[in-house]
View (cartoon, one colour):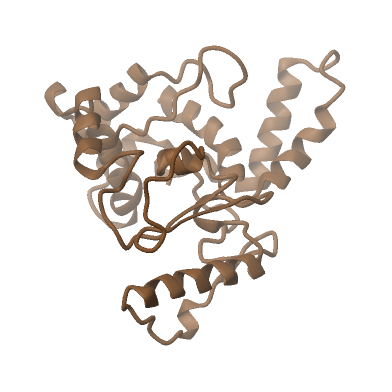
Length: 258
């Protein structure tokens, strides 16, 4: 389906930034700078295809995440637990659709609209119109859980990273420094600003990850929660760029909006 291809095109770029691999994307684009007057659309297409192949592997577009029919027919096992489940949340509760702006620069095709993504929801889940996400349902969800202003809870350590596009779906009043309604002791907030620091800490240098973990442990201890002893399986993983993160990106890993 056309919507799958368009979504995959955008994720090929966004995934690199989101998961701490911005430098890899920039390295692929640098040779094109200053040559716009001599490059054709075919040249751009080939450059993008080569980047995607090197970054994510030859099976990138074979993932179920970019195959609505696969998601529709996958009722169990990993696909159902990841791609299909995430789409169900998007289609019925939160509406985290990654559309393209109709003006200015964009890494997603402008034809990737809300209407197309809602049509994908209908195709994958066969749901009646009344079950699809609406502005009213999103408002009800945010009213219940606090939305962008306050999580409505305490004893939560909110952490965001500067290169993570999803930080704007977090507690945005803190991300944008517009206000600080949280209590430092019961609901601390950390915004780590560094080049290549992405989603869930992907791409964060090991020393900074260790520092954040120490802050997490200190917050838990202040709430009377003792961290269990570390085991070999809990050790952070090393990413493809040599950085250390509990969510390190591996070659060929799905990139989408997880």
